[in-house]
Length: 326
Ligand code: FDA
Image (cartoon, rainbow, N blue to C red; front, side, top):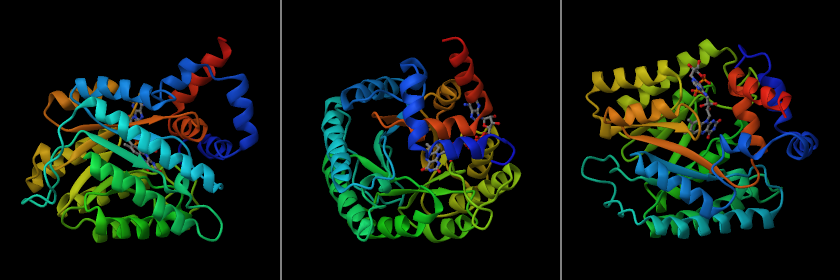
């Protein structure tokens, strides 16, 4: 957000194919990328997933890739998810009970996948929306058959209307489908009101893209205040809030709201990114909270990695120090 002056530069760099080639070729060691990314293959990520499940955490695995402009690439992403779902079966986790349950809230289920619709063809010219819907439907059907949850990620604001329309359509066949909303967008408080009905699962994050002032709060303080307002709407709603933040203030706000509104630790979950605040993740688990870790894997790590650098000067310092010591 605006308080980190390098954020816009890093986010712009994250969309440059030329810089991607330079960074990937010359700089990043495997160990540096591995801090945020749990392997390049389905088999590797499932190894990391097994470790996380063993520590009492839940997971949502993301196959890295975004902004696909090639239908064959979108099909390859579908295939990667189908193959991941097959690998999940090696973990032998129990199937979730039927949903919606009597309480209208989802039962605990440790395995999830996260989808970026732009990786499934949403940005293809002409029929991107329809292609992404068809591809996402295929993945959701396979996940449903395997007893695995799906949540749809939020990307830049130009995709929000299309993404939420696809989510609404998919929820007719897959009522457990979750979606991500970004607190930095002006529209999100209203979206939270509209989407927090019975059976809904909303993952609330602050938002990771470079957005113009016309659509998004620019100052960190305004984004934080929006997050707390949106969180309150979700906590008051009839769905299952998923509190996606590493920020102690947001973690405390969720705890406070839940206590005030009579939500138990099973009526919500905390979520954090792989490799970030590992100690806090396990601390929350030891207090009895559900914690889900978003676990990215694959070879197209550049955009995701640059967003992580942009979020936190300390990540950038770590990165630069590793360059200097190479
Ligand atoms: P922020 O970055 O504002 O940091 C606030 C405070 O948190 C810091 O001052 C520090 O105290 C603490 N903190 C943060 N990072 C830390 C670290 N590495 N170590 C120690 N302390 C740290 N975005 C998006 O646009 N679309 C999406 O679909 C998703 N999906 C998503 C899923 C999940 C599970 C998560 C956790 C996040 C996302 N995001 C996302 C990313 C999100 O929008 C946001 O950019 C990051 O989570 C960073 O914002 P925070 O709320 O974590 O705090």
